[in-house]
Length: 572
Image (cartoon, rainbow, N blue to C red; front, side, top):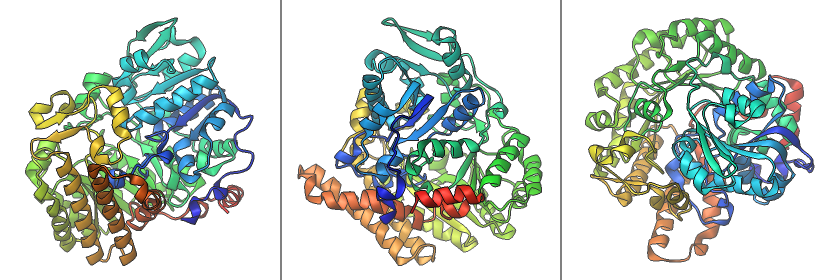
């Protein structure tokens, strides 16, 4: 795809001479993915990221806002996005030239275990006197192994929030910082995970931070939240931390938060704080806004709906639910903008599978929601399904498409997506801690095994589990079948065109071919060109054509003529 060329997205000045107080760096899942024959097709199918999981964590934006308002110069650098855009980008040279007192690297989900620690190693080699700090749920879970085995990491900030601890670390040092494990003259010391905010109102995002960051980076592909943001931008707002559900494989479940991150109650963002954040986005751009978390937590729907309606937004809004909502809730949300989209994850068309996974609602309830969506004329309802769940067997792969077509008879506003439970059952989840209770077997336990698994030639060998009903080959086969059948159903329903369908088919065909080569011991260099074309260039096109969310390109979303001119210049 022409838009992925190097020249279109970087200025000759690069990052030479760039100095910040804090550099927040997002790594690809596998650091040297450009030198490997990696092809992961459908594992990132239901998120905007491509197969290297190039989306920065939301916490980078709250951290940058919080620290910037207290006088610190903060830069956000999305290496994963830049490396996808520019195959010749010299990562080591960039990191060598990037000067900071503290380098913060996210290791939130375990899929970044390889890339995050490799970036830490490179930074420590070039900047031995600066501090390298990790943060996120996965780094919290594996904190002792990280500190014992990776001496390039000076500290790990623990838990689901890092704003106050990071500021304490900068101002007073680790000994007076809560939520931290650090290396002290060869000894590993840990301070209690004691700062657990119960409100998110203080930690909203100033979206001008992104604009300032872009000017600082002087490189659009390095400063964006994810690689395809330039073609398909979307803004997100975290409305809650913690969860009331206990989905058995989730590292962000109620069980995991309580047992490993000491969060026993939800931290909510108030309707007023959410509305203020929406207004900040709307003043800058008309891009879609996704609300992360079910707004029924804390009974916030009615008040927030009124506040959003008063803003008279041009932006399309996207709301997610963890169980089917009432008609009254839907009526309130429908009034918030001219176009409103909804999302829910039934996970399986079968109620017994859904219940075993941790989503205890019936098909009747879901279908009632679909009828309300039709009656209230929502723009769309997206359904998300998975393969690799408890009580799920390979033959159920065919059910996703058939159930989708059944729901389309109720409303043609329904769309659907499917992906495998991949690559990992999350550390700390119920299925990870007590796998036999839920019919799982966990294949990797230590961090280094996960780092090696991520570099597997095919994603089958990165899966850290098998179930009593499916082995790893079954998970792969059923996932690809479900994906194929669903796209065929979407073609028949007129949701995608023939080209999108054929591109999606090519991805699946290549996935099967790569697996055949790996299992027969054949050299993958025979199909290197196909892997590079499909994995790097066509993944973005397929995702855009399958309409994961509504959008238009970045330059057309921006309201400021000056900023629009800068973006247009950088994307010429």
